[in-house]
Amino acid sequence: MASAPQANLPLFYKDLMPLNSRDHGKWSSKNVDRAVWAATQHAIPLTVDEFPQAQRHFPIVFSSGDNPVPLALMGLNEGINTFFDEEGKALEDFYVPAYIRRYPYLLAKLDSKSENMSLCFDPSADLLGEFKEGNPLFDGEGQPSEHTQGILQFCERFEEAGQRTAAFIEELKKHDLLMEGEVAIQRGDGADPQPYIYRGFAMINQEKLREVRGDVLRTWNQNGMLALIFAQLLSLDLMRVIFARQTGQGKGPGAAAAQAENA
Image 1 (cartoon, rainbow, N blue to C red):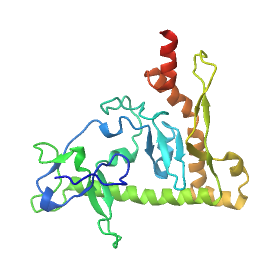
Image 2 (cartoon, rainbow, N blue to C red; image 1 turned 135 degrees about the horizontal axis):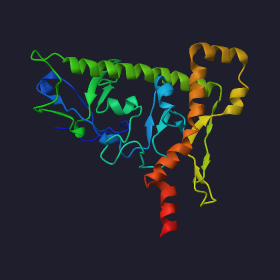
Image 3 (spheres, helix red, strand yellow; image 1 turned 60 degrees about the vertical axis):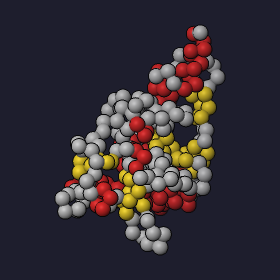
Image 4 (cartoon, rainbow, N blue to C red; image 1 turned 30 degrees about the vertical axis):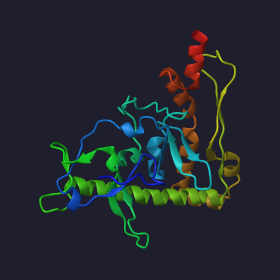
């Protein structure tokens, strides 16, 4: 049985349960071709390792607040995801962020006094259980199956990428390069003269970036950070593409305005 939903869980997760051979020795994981959990989420956490691929498909921004994280914008308004339908089926081929692919698994500390992390899962997802079909989680001797070992390795790599992402953010903050973002977008048909204003996110301040000392820029160029910065900045051109996508799908304020005009 799942325990009561826990507070302060990450996006998507409603509960967490440690995976173990005693309770889940005969369990399997379902094969799925859709991500229902992501269907109505417009902003998905990213790691810096994903910037080169993600910037081709989504605007990359940062969450506001004292602890910003990179986000892939799959829609510009709450509840809108232009890459999945309402049932979580992909509408086209695109880079699926690792955060979506990791669910329902998560590495978590079960003991606050220990640094050890255990592989857990969200039992509310109904993706693991005693299914007749699927990938067994343990072998006949109670050892993690090859499938489970692969999941563990994926989650470990995700955590390592998360540490690199945190270091990237700290470097941006050290040089005061994050600023509150604002983007004004007008409908492509020109019917509405008033632009739609999007705020509530952070972005890299290009003016302050130009003031960064040359020796710092050389270090960033050598360690790859400069390429990540430019990937984020260049990806912002896709804000208008995402706006057009959601309007074309009949979603968001642009679509609502067009429907009102045609009524």
